[in-house]
Image 1 (cartoon, rainbow, N blue to C red):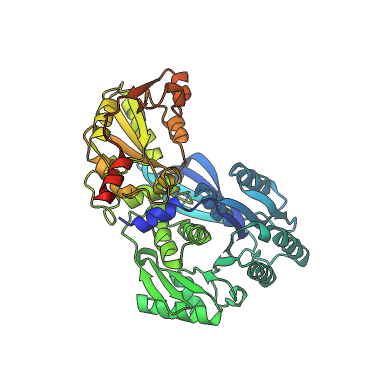
Image 2: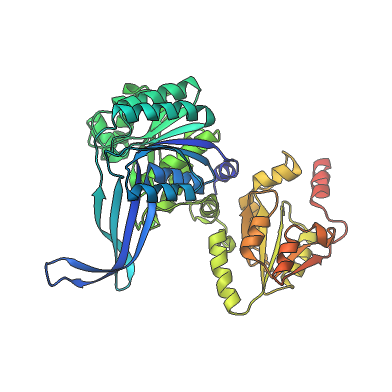
Length: 495
């Protein structure tokens, strides 16, 4: 278990991020690949669903929003129906789209993917059709982007550049971005294009080319970790970077820092369904972590986890902090807890609870820090479990505990507290929340019974009114005299 990464996730906050780059619309056509066409030797796809998602730089912005960042987006669309659809999706996600400029001389970039299912399952991408132009934006559009940059840069904590080589990240736009950010002390991270000339990224804080991109830019054939390090060091020196981060797919990432640090950060094996969006996810999490004050090694390790979760999904998909925490706590790479199967993300929890409810089971919910578990806690949880067929315990995250109890708490980090609770027979599921109260969890889970200690009155129980409004009830469990976590900690200090 990586306590450092769990702590980082819990202190990410709400960084303000400006994403600069090529916005695009990802369209997916889903269907069953049933047979070979009689007209030609090609697979016939019987389509049954059409889906549209944000792609390119707008995908990075969407991923950042899902991770809790406040995001502004700077890019260019056409004056067509796809532009209207793209703007609508951006607005629906809560991304600031003041920086989306219309250029009637170019089409909105659209990537249309056809996803076929074999025998009604096992979806695989069959074909991608691109609608685009790669011509650089005109001088007028470039100047308009520069004006928006000057207004947006003072409002953000970090700048991410997502360059898909569709004409937005011109040398002029990049120069304005880098110079403006430097003047304000902001980091600029760029996911570069595939090419041999990286001069426009000169002065960025860091770039994140993949194995092939780094090889092309450095003139190397990167087949080993040592070659990746050499390419990264060369790029960092030539472009005056703080760091070059070379992503190496299943081999993780290579960091080459200006201060001489060079290291490979491996990633654990995953069931890879689709690599689409992995690079965007890495850029998003690196930026989020660095904006929250993390150093490059921490940020890279966290991005490795998020990128791994991304490739387990089909297409460009979001990953939440909750999913990252769940992976960190339950992954065999990090956890030795045999009962970690009880720890669930909210999405997993809702899915399992739906099944239990269909079988007529009632759900009880309680929450707390459960920092130093004692006999009073055990009695309390046993009584809570007796109120229903299933007991969920929501744990305050480490950051949440610090906010409630002070900087010296918790004594035990979230993974240790989750492990101890998971080992109790009375507890069926454990989850975590970062806020001061669990009201969002309660509203999502809709428990039949909300349990709190008898030291509260019913009108003091957070979520009590909500639970009772849909036919549930609040139960005040008895507290065992003589047991208090705070008093136990005081006694331990005296001893």
